[in-house]
Length: 206
Image 1 (spheres, rainbow, N blue to C red):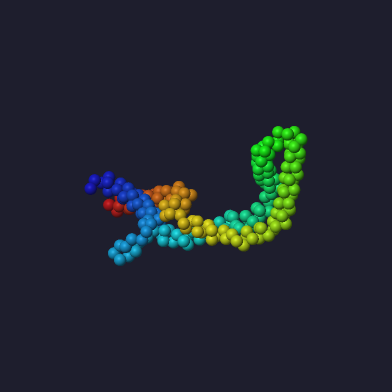
Image 2: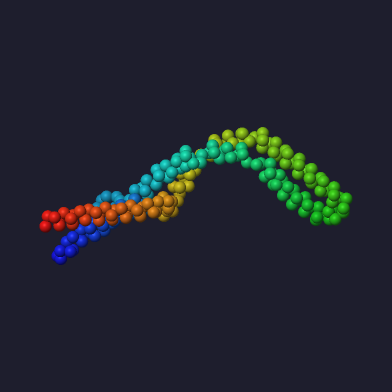
């Protein structure tokens, strides 16, 4: 072996081995998706194997740290119900009553048209006021019922666990793709440094 290769090969081989080791270790976190048998041993990626536990953990973290049922229930108390109710009532009444009046040709009669507009305005006001009063009366009860009936953690865990394996893998890796590549690169650097140390050792012992 040429003397140059004796000192160049260890760092290069070490870099390749270091990168390949970390690359394989990362892939084995996710692959194989489904269990396979090798010499009587069942092999499956750690994350697919524990996907239910991971989904539960992610859901619990979101529930505890980011968005809980209590937070959503509190939103119900801050919604501008007045504008929403008034808009909904106005749209519904304008659409239905005006269409009926037009079909009967009553809107073409000035006096009836003027009266109908006045009546429609008061109908809108009465309905909106009644609905808002009921909402205000039941708002606390609605929020309490929402808290008791919506289990955010259970719902999120089910949704995450229902993802197919590729989507589940993508969910976990989408935020850490760059970090995983850094781990692979770190393996190559570590292997290179180990190989370089060996080359230096060979040089002084030669």
